[in-house]
Image: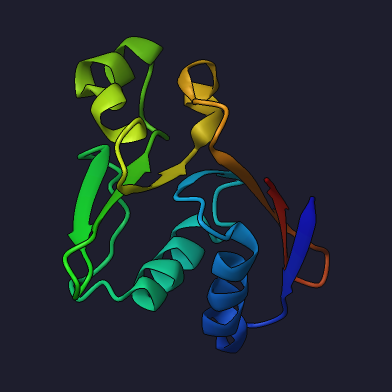
Length: 139
């Protein structure tokens, strides 16, 4: 397990670069953390670092957003906060995303834990008492 600490938003770009360095060639990430812990913020910074040219937003209502990097790579960004049952992930056709070569970032991954392949990197974000963020990355 690797741990990153973010002391302020000014460090988010540096932290996203370090995150990708730690991840190596892995492209599938399952994020957990309390509401407001920064899951969307770090995913946005990672996407920016990967070269996404469009606006990155939380897919809270659509469940999944698709982005493209400047070089044409596909990134899927999921938000499972609103799913009420695992059947919603099945209806979404999760296999096409999770087993593709595309980048996948999932917020509220604990709601779909039973269908996540083993190759997903588990990422937990915790807000510390001093309002900094501790990011635990389990490869």
